[in-house]
Amino acid sequence: MAAVELRNVRKSFGTVDVIKGVDLTIDKGEFVVFVGASGSGKSTLLRMIAGLETVSDGDILIDGTDVTFAEPSERGIAMVFQSYALYPHMNVYDNIAFNLKLARFGKDEIDKRVKEAARILRLNELLSRSPAQLSGGQRQRVAIGRAIVRNPKVFLFDEPLSNLDAALRVQMRLEIERLHRELGTTMIYVTHDQVEAMTLADRIVALDNGRIQQVGPPLDLYARPNNLFVAGFIGSPR
Ligand code: ADP
Ligand code: MG
Image 1 (tube, helix red, strand yellow):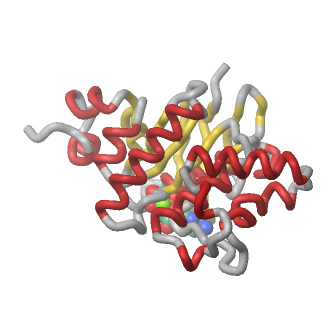
Image 2 (tube, helix red, strand yellow):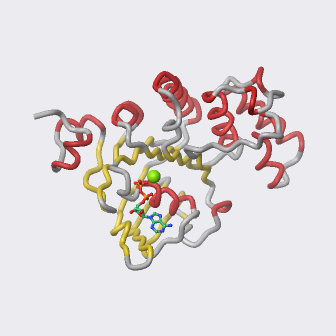
């Protein structure tokens, strides 16, 4: 069974068609990266999968269940954004635990999950710090920790590293790679960074103007781009 399936998904804002019929099947455990220029519809597509944006037409299935009209909290997904606002008045532990408390998980279960996330993300020593006492990379790890504790079926990342400086981006990219290896969870990752796409993806989905231009393993797109758009983004110089 597919982890995520998009069937002829469309989105219009008013009279403007932004996603123009996207079909895509993502396998369990796969790391899929959406690439494309700014405005190509990457975030809109991700937000529809998350349930943060309604679908104008088509269907979205997660683990074989039609979630097209399901609430975000019913979809079994967790999303990590570029601007990862932590609660400044809460320490790291409480920031990671917050959504579980809202969902009325028991104290012991919360504690177990927060400590497991802290182990995976190497935040053990930082649990009692406040966000102001953390570096940018540590803050981003806390934001990822908030997603991990919900045991999602699918992680969605929308340009999670674009606010970080170059050195930190590399470090966090390796961190996300390790997270995927350790958890084995399906991940959909949006970026306009070619290196992130090439190194993280099992498959790259190249979007342009609301349509999929090409889907395939990074080296396929690199060596055999379907068209000039894909070639310009990821293809070999020729
Ligand atoms: P990307 O993430 O690839 O940069 P987006 O999905 O954010 O692209 O946007 C795709 C297109 O949809 C853009 O033209 C954008 O202006 C438009 N768009 C996104 N959200 C809205 C909205 N809430 N209302 C109107 N237009 C929107
Ligand atoms: Mg975007």
